[in-house]
Image 1 (spheres, rainbow, N blue to C red):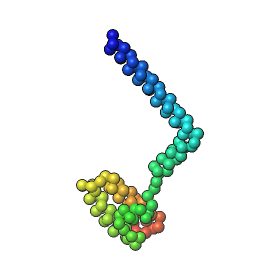
Image 2 (cartoon, rainbow, N blue to C red; image 1 turned 60 degrees about the vertical axis):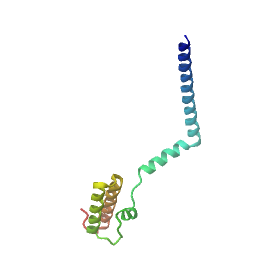
Image 3 (cartoon, one colour; image 1 turned 45 degrees about the vertical axis):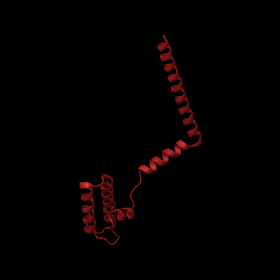
Image 4 (cartoon, one colour; image 1 turned 90 degrees about the vertical axis):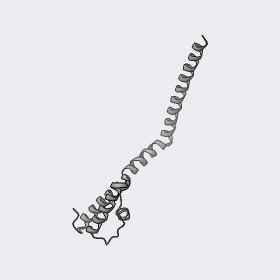
Amino acid sequence: MASKILANLIIMGSSILARSFVQAYRQALANASKSGVAQETLQNTIHRGSKVMTEQEARQILGITEETSWEEILKKYDVLFERNAKNGSFYIQSKVHRAKECLEASYMDKGQGNPS
Protein backbone atom coordinates (compact mmCIF):
# COMPACT_ATOMS: atom_id res chain seq x y z
CA MET A 1 0.00 0.00 0.00
CA ALA A 2 2.76 2.47 0.93
CA SER A 3 4.73 1.59 -2.20
CA LYS A 4 1.67 2.31 -4.35
CA ILE A 5 1.25 5.73 -2.73
CA LEU A 6 4.96 6.46 -3.15
CA ALA A 7 4.87 5.45 -6.82
CA ASN A 8 1.84 7.71 -7.42
CA LEU A 9 3.59 10.62 -5.72
CA ILE A 10 6.70 10.14 -7.88
CA ILE A 11 4.65 9.97 -11.08
CA MET A 12 2.58 13.03 -10.17
CA GLY A 13 5.68 14.98 -9.14
CA SER A 14 7.46 14.07 -12.38
CA SER A 15 4.52 15.17 -14.51
CA ILE A 16 4.23 18.47 -12.63
CA LEU A 17 7.95 19.06 -13.04
CA ALA A 18 7.82 18.22 -16.77
CA ARG A 19 4.92 20.61 -17.33
CA SER A 20 6.81 23.34 -15.47
CA PHE A 21 9.86 22.88 -17.69
CA VAL A 22 7.76 23.01 -20.85
CA GLN A 23 6.01 26.16 -19.66
CA ALA A 24 9.32 27.82 -18.72
CA TYR A 25 10.80 26.93 -22.11
CA ARG A 26 7.81 28.41 -23.94
CA GLN A 27 8.10 31.57 -21.87
CA ALA A 28 11.83 31.82 -22.60
CA LEU A 29 11.15 31.51 -26.35
CA ALA A 30 8.47 34.20 -26.15
CA ASN A 31 10.81 36.53 -24.26
CA ALA A 32 13.64 35.91 -26.72
CA SER A 33 11.46 36.64 -29.73
CA LYS A 34 10.19 39.86 -28.13
CA SER A 35 13.70 41.11 -27.41
CA GLY A 36 15.17 40.00 -30.75
CA VAL A 37 17.70 37.66 -29.17
CA ALA A 38 16.46 34.68 -31.18
CA GLN A 39 16.83 36.54 -34.50
CA GLU A 40 20.30 37.81 -33.58
CA THR A 41 21.44 34.33 -32.62
CA LEU A 42 20.15 32.92 -35.89
CA GLN A 43 21.93 35.63 -37.90
CA ASN A 44 25.22 35.04 -36.05
CA THR A 45 24.98 31.31 -36.75
CA ILE A 46 24.45 31.94 -40.45
CA HIS A 47 27.38 34.37 -40.65
CA ARG A 48 29.72 32.04 -38.80
CA GLY A 49 28.82 29.09 -41.04
CA SER A 50 29.49 30.99 -44.25
CA LYS A 51 32.83 32.51 -43.28
CA VAL A 52 35.21 32.43 -46.22
CA MET A 53 38.96 32.18 -45.75
CA THR A 54 40.82 35.33 -46.75
CA GLU A 55 43.93 35.30 -48.89
CA GLN A 56 45.98 36.67 -45.98
CA GLU A 57 44.76 33.87 -43.70
CA ALA A 58 45.55 31.27 -46.37
CA ARG A 59 49.10 32.62 -46.74
CA GLN A 60 49.53 32.57 -42.97
CA ILE A 61 48.37 28.95 -42.72
CA LEU A 62 50.79 27.82 -45.43
CA GLY A 63 53.58 30.07 -44.14
CA ILE A 64 54.19 31.88 -47.44
CA THR A 65 54.43 35.45 -48.70
CA GLU A 66 52.80 37.26 -51.59
CA GLU A 67 55.89 36.75 -53.74
CA THR A 68 55.84 32.96 -53.36
CA SER A 69 55.51 31.10 -56.66
CA TRP A 70 52.72 28.61 -57.29
CA GLU A 71 55.20 25.71 -57.38
CA GLU A 72 56.51 26.64 -53.92
CA ILE A 73 52.94 26.89 -52.65
CA LEU A 74 52.23 23.38 -53.91
CA LYS A 75 55.40 22.03 -52.26
CA LYS A 76 54.48 23.67 -48.97
CA TYR A 77 50.92 22.36 -49.28
CA ASP A 78 52.09 18.80 -49.97
CA VAL A 79 54.43 18.80 -46.97
CA LEU A 80 51.84 20.19 -44.55
CA PHE A 81 49.00 18.04 -45.88
CA GLU A 82 51.00 14.80 -45.68
CA ARG A 83 52.42 15.63 -42.26
CA ASN A 84 48.92 16.08 -40.86
CA ALA A 85 47.56 13.06 -42.73
CA LYS A 86 50.00 10.70 -41.00
CA ASN A 87 50.10 11.83 -37.40
CA GLY A 88 48.52 15.23 -37.24
CA SER A 89 45.16 16.86 -36.99
CA PHE A 90 42.31 16.43 -39.47
CA TYR A 91 41.25 19.99 -38.63
CA ILE A 92 44.66 21.41 -39.56
CA GLN A 93 44.77 19.21 -42.65
CA SER A 94 41.42 20.63 -43.79
CA LYS A 95 42.61 24.19 -43.06
CA VAL A 96 45.70 23.55 -45.22
CA HIS A 97 43.50 22.24 -48.02
CA ARG A 98 41.15 25.25 -47.80
CA ALA A 99 44.15 27.58 -47.85
CA LYS A 100 45.40 25.98 -51.06
CA GLU A 101 41.92 26.27 -52.62
CA CYS A 102 41.71 29.93 -51.64
CA LEU A 103 45.12 30.74 -53.11
CA GLU A 104 44.38 28.69 -56.21
CA ALA A 105 41.30 30.80 -56.88
CA SER A 106 43.32 33.94 -56.18
CA TYR A 107 46.09 32.94 -58.57
CA MET A 108 43.59 32.06 -61.30
CA ASP A 109 41.93 35.47 -60.91
CA LYS A 110 45.27 37.25 -61.17
CA GLY A 111 46.51 35.09 -64.01
CA GLN A 112 49.71 34.19 -62.15
CA GLY A 113 51.42 30.83 -62.42
CA ASN A 114 49.55 27.74 -63.45
CA PRO A 115 47.31 26.52 -60.63
CA SER A 116 46.30 23.01 -61.52
